[in-house]
Image 1 (cartoon, helix red, strand yellow):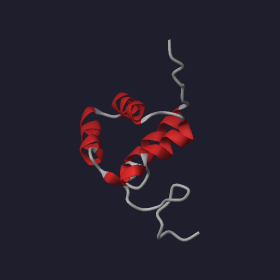
Image 2 (cartoon, one colour):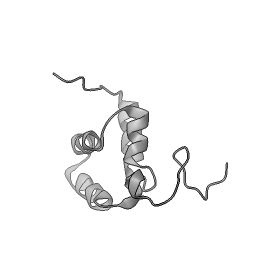
Image 3 (cartoon, one colour):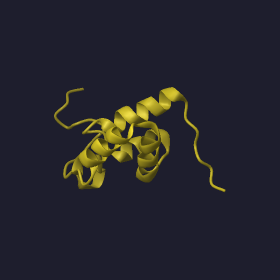
Image 4 (cartoon, one colour):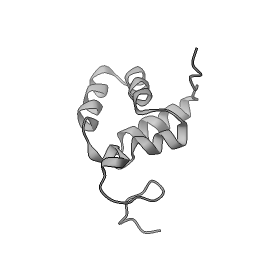
Length: 85
């Protein structure tokens, strides 16, 4: 069987927080936690209330900012190009 990563409650909370953020890409989540977008969706489904999950899916479905390749601009280390520092 596959090696599914196990996460602490703090890591799950952080993944959920990153998934809710409009400007945090699934690629950034994959880089930090080693999980694919489909696994993020499964994690969200398992840890959110039903209506919260539906709301999140409506927000992220087709959203260009959640996919690095669709953004249309260069990004550095998980931040907006207009952000200083």
